[in-house]
Length: 147
Figure 1 (tube, rainbow, N blue to C red):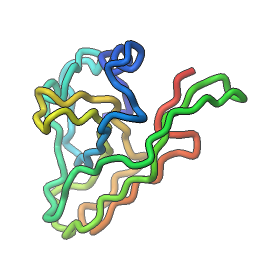
Figure 2 (figure 1 turned 45 degrees about the horizontal axis):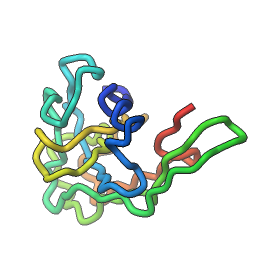
Figure 3 (figure 1 turned 30 degrees about the vertical axis):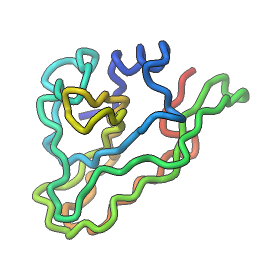
Figure 4 (figure 1 turned 180 degrees about the vertical axis):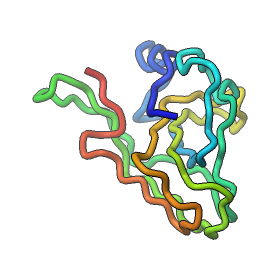
């Protein structure tokens, strides 16, 4: 699955339904069978994904993003969303599949039918399932940009 932002997230970002620097934004580490049978634009909540193949390694938990910030990048004529690099630590290295990417979402109450996707970020190469820690160094240009 390639990196993507669902239209529902774009609408929520523009109408104020998601506030990136004050809401509870989390990251979910996904393994290689994460899929979306419908067009990504038809995704409204996490339950709309065909399969969010969440890490099954012992010790895994979703990570709340820290130090979220939205800022203007006047030199590049855009706004950027960034946060402290995410780290999935304490993994036992016993996942059943390699890691494919990370799902950024608005945590509402911990149920897929209510939590709202913001973006899926595909890794350029899969991370081995034997990893005991997966660090996500966000781009120096931020996690998301709006131009």
